[in-house]
Length: 499
Image 1 (cartoon, rainbow, N blue to C red):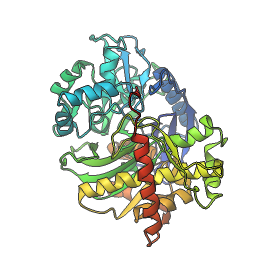
Image 2: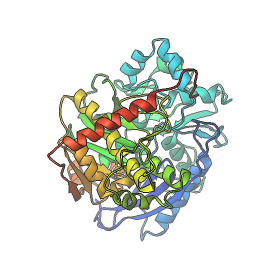
Image 3: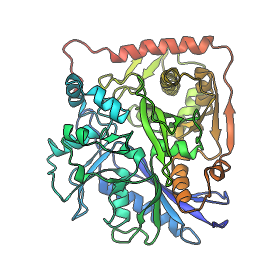
């Protein structure tokens, strides 16, 4: 039985940093700590992280938050950037190569080769995914080939969640959950098990992969071997987007959410039956509960939304902080005809074009930093519309509304644009850190902190809703121009290689 002071701590290991967050049963303000970590770009299209730095950031933020609590948390939950892969030694606990990040495109040619060999149908049917370097399987294969990692009994292969769990438990537990496993291109989402045929196809030894356990259920207990606070159960794990769906209390089929993070990810709960592969969409495991209940989701994956704001800050240096982009974009009424297609690492749903590249069209002498900022903000809403249009066509139903979260969801201007583009009401909750909240709910549900899904639903509170303009004329005209800009981003001159 929980008490008012009961709390759960979630570790939210994102693409650019790690946040630890204490979530209290009585609804008092959470306690959190955050650390960024280094982004490495060793070659064009390559993105890497230092796995040790990720663990150190997780350990530091976890210890900081727990140090500020009056009593230890009941349980820890983990949510993480998905598809990013790590290889490490079981005996030493040390990584054998830098982590290869979900944004990385180095295996695009290998995906083309597999498609040419007729393997797309197999991948689509077994995994619900497409042949794209976004997913983990070809990254594992690269590590074991070009990357020089040697397959042996000492080898552990995993995603960021399993790396953090390994360190939290002092090397005792190598496990993951179905939501993360379903993003690897090695996991049969029907049988909920690693697929021997796919592992053989990509030369990935199954013995090196993590044990798959329910998203909500006890994975292990923390130890201080690698500096974690000892004696706390770790009882919830989910990939960040599925965690956000859970944190938004989208427990019923037909409920949907979008997270505006480094990329944007729209998930639609489609219930306990795995649907057939859908053109332009991904099918993914949303979560599996301790009682065996499984929820599936259709997903639209957009690689770059918030990362485009970072590009304005770090690349073009037209803003000094991400918080400036909203007011700067709102300082002009329109973009003056400028469209930014932020295909910095290719295009995701519904295009799945790893060779598309970032494009700016419509620049004139009147174009300034405000127009570019607004064009980047608008690009978020257009990309979400592209994915939602494909998703609703596949599902055969319209969205009733869209629940939103993530850093950019703080921008009222952007959310009103989003409502106008989609033609549905957009709802932002009071607590917008729903990725961490979902991990906390999954962990707390397993340990009895929350008694049921209904108890979790009662925690969801509306902050603001954005109602669309009933006149669709302007929204449709702007979106039509956007689609023309997308086609420009996908056109490659003859003889030019994007690799």
